[in-house]
Image 1 (cartoon, helix red, strand yellow):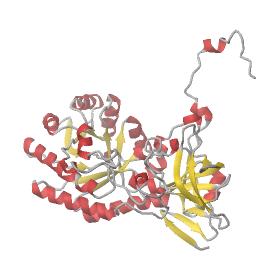
Image 2 (tube, helix red, strand yellow; image 1 turned 45 degrees about the horizontal axis):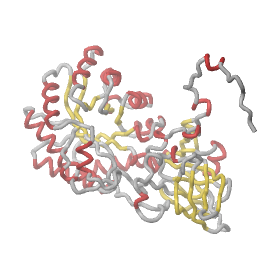
Image 3 (cartoon, one colour; image 1 turned 135 degrees about the vertical axis):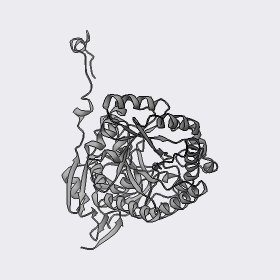
Image 4 (spheres, helix red, strand yellow; image 1 turned 90 degrees about the vertical axis):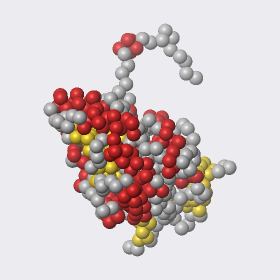
Length: 469
């Protein structure tokens, strides 16, 4: 059967059916129900390998790719990326435990965060996971952990670079606000003065800690290669200042955080005209990102006569966004001033309640040439507006139709809530013609499982029961 390749392991057959790899979307919906996160293992592995290949070709030094597990907590995803050579960013004890549960190598993980507890510091030291310090008092907490655990700690510091190169660059995340201004008001990282203080104290206790690296993270402020190229100078200036103040100390690694995107890039897409099509591609290629980074990095290291460090990138949306499709079933279709199409997927399951400026491409699970196109507004089942897509052209919808919402892998499942007591979706992993459940659907019982009603309330009833009309 002839198929049209829509990209990212999404295919359309000549009879109009939609496939994820070799499995029909309609079959997935029948077997596992909707709403349903469908993960393409082939696409996930392809994304992972493309980054390593591009950055390894452009960067002459060592590379350690990292996975930002905050973008998607599915343990099968974490396991696959461990197999592909990815370490990971762990923000807090929960993400550290999840990464270790999925088999990640401790020495390739890093614990980040501005309010680390003694619990996560103890766990990191005990497991041999490095810690990126984000406050001046963390060194004392780490040394206490070393004494209790009996194991030397590997540490770095999170950098608060000056960001002057971003003075006139507006953030898509923050409505055009200067990225430099956002860096200045952010709580993350240590100043140069604080870094020198903590670094000197760490170097004074070499039997307890090895101070060897730096970390920074900007996030996905802009969808161009300037994100990585303009981040380099301030970071390297910070490293040079430490070198000059700490008797020639230089970092073994420099972690550049995340923010790199790919493909359709739904981030802030609503700021642009038209609704995205499944065939749209607007992000730079990973080769362009890698080239821009390597050129800027080598140039700046040369200016300050610094050696090549091992570079690390904490990738989230680049790896997982395009590898996941949400399948959803149409319910009520109401036609009046507009055509309102209600489906069983909510903005609360797609991260749109937090990022309403995202725009996900949507395609029908089955094309029907006999139905004319209709412009619709797509809504979810919650009591808010729950607007998933607007000005969306679909074959004239009707109850029971299947829809595919694309690029939902990043910050959807991990930030999903159960608003209006709607259970969170299941996830399946597709590999070729096979599909396996990797996260079961939440139940109503699980939503309320943490609730307790005191016994005295069971014994208390109103003196007079209300009468219902």
